[in-house]
Every structure is written in C-alpha cells, then in structure tokens.
Length: 222
Image (cartoon, rainbow, N blue to C red; front, side, top):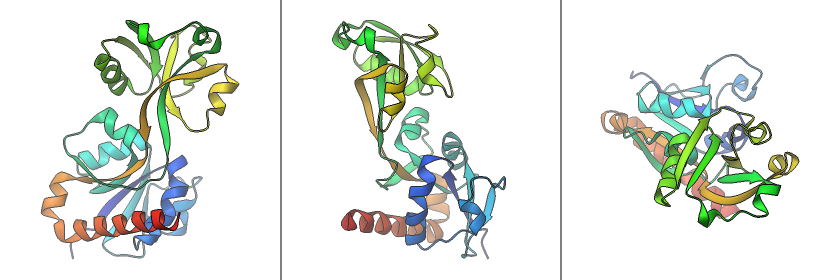
C-alpha cells in the first residue's frame, strides 16, 4: 500500500470551520485532532490512505510546498505572502472569510488621505504582500515584521500603520485604530503540492474532487 497522503490543517480560527468540510469530504480524524489543547501534531483518520497534521497556518504552506504534506488547507493571505511556485490552489473553500487591511490610529486617519502616500512605515506579518500592494500604487513601504500584537505598534511608535487580518474590526477599535484601505479579501483554499498532484494523482485527484464537492455543497446550503 502507498504511504498515506498527509493533509495539513491550520490551528486557530480556520480549524472549527474546516472540520465539517473535512468530514463532508469523507475524512474523519481521531477525536484528539479537534482538541487544540492536545500537543500531538500528527493524527490518524478513519482512512488508511490519509493522515493529518495540525500546524501553524504559515507552516501549512511550507509543509505542502516542500512535499512533506501533499495537501493542505490555508488562507489565501498565506498563499499570497509566500507565493510558492510549488503550490496549486484548486479549490476556494469559502471559509475563514476576512480581509487584509491597512489600519492607522483614529487621530491620524481624520486628516489622512491614502491617495497622497508616497512612503509608509507599517508593522505586519505580511511584508512581501504589503510591499507588492504598495508598490503597485507607487508607494514605498518600509515593513516592520511582527508575528502578533500588531495593534500596539502605532501606540508605541514602532510604525504609524499596520497591515493585518481583519474580521469584525473589534480588535482595531479597542486599540484606537481604524481601517483606511483594504489590501485583499481572504478565504481558505485547498492547496496541493504540484509534484504530488502529478505523481500521486490516483490519490490526490479524488480527494481534491471530494473537497470541491464539499465546498459547493456548503455554498448551496447557505
């Protein structure tokens, strides 16, 4: 029997939404997978041909791009940040919906016009995506790489603005920030290692089709 495919799934906000889709695609992981307090990283499923790993969102793309996992679920923000040539994203799962936005202190925004920017200093965990976005507008972006606590950066003078994921906007508001520009709309995608898509097509292609059907079924039911 061939080695099982490895499906990489991110910890955090997407996990809860992903579980029903994974089940609809015909994969049921062992109970510990849904327990984020579990320190286990690899999990069995009810299928001999599929195992699962649960890692940080940015690491999902890395595992799949390098072939350590053959298939994964990750936000389009991560795909855009890394821009791995080895990744194929055949299915928009339409979960984990949010956006990447530029935000700044409310006081600054009151007299600010993004159309007049020529240089910005921003704190973000998306430096590549941020630079490309601003470069397309002819704006030079100086990026300060942070992995979290983005909202405190303007308060402490680390950067005037931030580029980060926004869902409800509540965290921004609680820290005195407002959105001034949307960089990209975000949703979770099914990603596949391009080499595995060719060399393990007999396993990968039916799984991609199952996820596509699950995603379409979810949209039809909405």
